Amino acid sequence: MSNILHSQVRRDVLAHVSGNLRRHRQASGMSQVALAEASGISRRMIVAVEAGDANISLSSLDKLAAAMGVGFVDLVRDPDRSSSADINEVTWRGNGPASAGVLLGTAPAAHETQMWLWSLEGGERYDAEPDPQGWHEMIFVTEGVLTLTVGGAEKDYPAGTFAIYSSAQDYSYANRQTGIVKFIRNVVS
Image 1 (cartoon, rainbow, N blue to C red):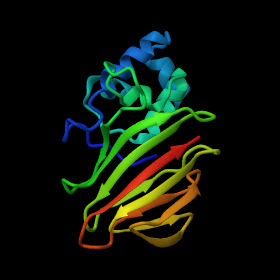
Image 2: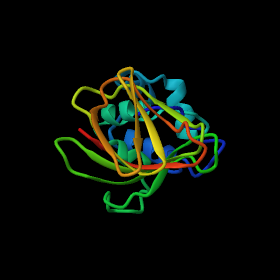
Image 3: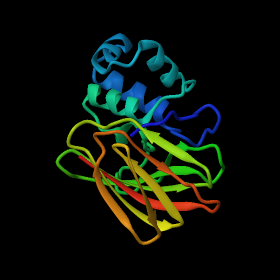
Image 4: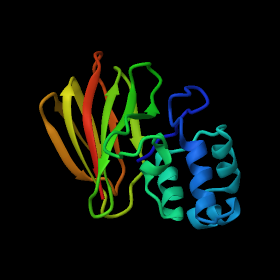
């Protein structure tokens, strides 16, 4: 999971991260300095995220969650919702208003499973950083043609097709068409 989130530009993106990060950090008994050391994320970034003033990548949120012993979902979901099967939170926005990544829900796996609804406007692209070993993605294209690049190999997936791959490598999604592309993305670890 990756890409910088422009949270101060669009308030619906990661609306709950600031409070959730602070609450989970305090519950784990960690100072901001201790969390920075455990996660490899700078204290300055942690301060800015807790204040709601930062752009942060999804992979950095993964690192913060792991350092506190919680899941990624615990940082992004509405704390008033008790079920992780119904999250429905925007966690990524592209430049176009219809380009978005929405985490729909999650279910238990060896570690975690997430289900996302993604849409990319024409010309939009999402570049991911590699996930830890053992993570995989499954995508199913519902509209348009998704160009998926995994480990340097590029392939087009039209509506009705799918791909399953290890996300512990560089990968990206692109829409090279003029219309919108939509796909379901499952992340499994």
